[in-house]
Length: 414
Image 1 (tube, one colour):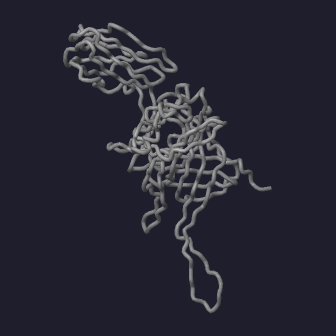
Image 2: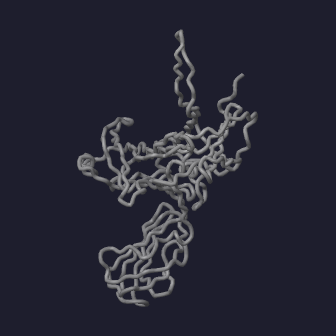
Image 3: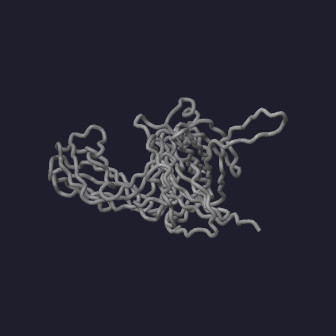
C-alpha cells in the first residue's frame, strides 16, 4: 500500500541569515489544517541539437524551487501579550511583529485634546493598564483651576468584559497619581490652568501583539515538511497571506509560499512535534464575532476576506539565489446584510472614491481575541446576493496606506 496522505508534520523557524537553515525542531511545529499542496518547480531550457533525424531532446533544469500552500487557524496564544503560534508565518509575507506590554499599554503623553482647551497637562506612566479589552478614557473638567484645584469626571464606556467607568470630582495634582480605569495610573504635570468643559482622552490597551506591513528587510523561514516518508527542506521561504472569516466556519489564515530547495531526505517515521502553542479557534458567529465597522457603518456580516497581495519571485543568478518579495497590494471583500440608503449610501461611497476605516473583532476571551483594522479602505463593485431569502450586499475592498506608509492593515491579538 502507498503512504498515508494524512500523516504529515510541519516545522518552521525564522532564519537569522537568509537561506541558511534555521534547523526547526519539535517546538517549532506548525499546525496546518485541512489539505495542503507541495510542488517542486523547475525552470528549464530545452536542448536543441542539430541531428540527422527527428525526435525529442532533453530539457535542462536551470532553476529549482518549491511551492507550499496551506492554512492555519486564526486564534490567539491564550495569553495577552504573547505572540500567537502563527505569528512567525506572517513575517515572511511582509509583516513586522510588535509586542506591547507593561506601561506601553497606556497612550503616550500628552493626552488627546478635544477642541481647544484652555488648560493642558503632560504625564508619566505609573501603573500599567490591567484591563482585558481596549478602552478610551474621557477626562472632562468640572472644576476649573490649576494643580490641586482642577477636578474632572473620568469616564469610559462599558466593554463586553467591563462595566462602564465613571468617577466624578477627581482632582488633578502635579506629581500625584491620577487614577484611570482598570488600575491604570498616570502622574500629571499641569501646563496651564483648566476651565470647565476642557476635555481630553487617553487610550488604554491590554497587553497585545500586532502585525503591520513592512516594505523592506523581509523575514524568511526554514520549513521542514515530513510527507510520504520524506523530509522536504524548504529554505528562504517567503510568500503571501490571506485572512478568511466566513460565518458558521472557523477563521483561517491561508498561506502561499515560495522557497529554495534545501534537500529531500528519507525520514521513515514522523518527527516529534510539540503543538501546545497552537490554540483552538472559535467559530465566526454572533457569539464570537462583532459586527464589522466599515466607513462608519455597522451591519451583520456573512463573510470577510483580506488578501495581503504580496508578490514573490524566485531569483537564480550567478552568485545569488533568493525568493524576493517585490510588491504588495492589499485587497479584500465583504458580504453584509444590505443596508438601507438612509443607513449608508454605499453607491455614493463607490462613486465618489471615498476612503474610510474598517475594523472587525473576532473572539471574546482575553488571549484569544483578534482584531483586523484598516485605516483607508475603498469600496468598489457593489452587488446583491440572495442569502437564505434575504438580500445581501457584496463589496470589493482595497486597503490603502496613508502618507505615513505601511499602515493599510493592522492585525491585533489581545
